[in-house]
Image (cartoon, rainbow over all chains, first blue to last red; front, top):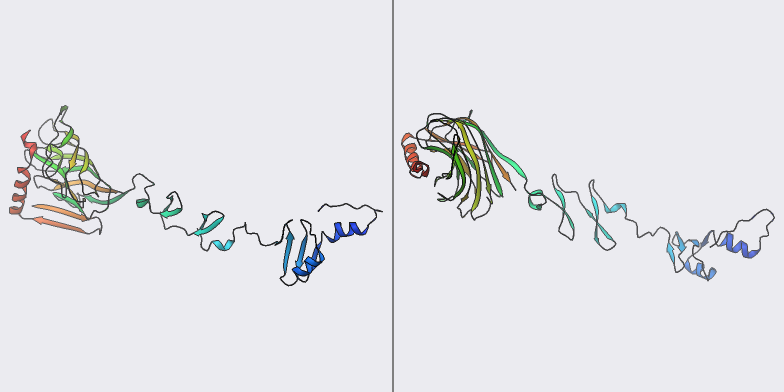
Length: 291
Length: 40
């Protein structure tokens, strides 16, 4: 409906009174029937109040609608708890998505949004956690075993500043994986002593060699990355290891190679040990698990 | 004396296993018999 501006002295015919004042005010009726009887040809924008329903309605040009019936708005009652999200569950349809638990991330399956733990989400490539640490200075042992491993896609073994006194010729310290079968010579890499690299990394049938030594280990170091630990098929193992000194000159040994842990069950334990049986006297051994 | 420290990463429990001299000799022989490094 148009709006007319009246000035001083302007005439006010009945038609102007009806059009510009009556029809543009909030008109009150007993009910919709009374309104229909009074307004046979409503104009878009007219507003009425119905006593029986206590509703203010506006004429859209096609129908009278409740002025408060705004179906396009999202009611606040959709959410109930701090952290709730409002998501669509269809065309012009919304629902509440409660907050996820601590550490969960919002993921999509292409259809809907879901709070999911990173371990199962696959959103991150690998999520590592420290499974255990052993300080050999306070717990001198010849073998450190991490047991109770489960559902780890990858395992990462760290050995730092390992020392071992009094060994014997041909001794090694090594990584032992439960269920591993004989994998001797199933290796690719390099090893060396001093400045002389050799072409054939050695391997025990009982374990994967970190380094060879003759009498003692001085500052042994090693990292071993074990892949597909949770599978019942073979696992690739990548090893970088060596000792800074000890034994017969030129003392230092190093070894870097990849090999296969031939297995038919998931890995549940890994050990770092030596073949002589003397205790490691110092060093830190850590096991990380990746999911 | 061979000692093995076993850390159960699921429970956090630590167990220390000790082997006798006789057991240690058996273990050493078993390991060394498989030690292909010595052949190099």
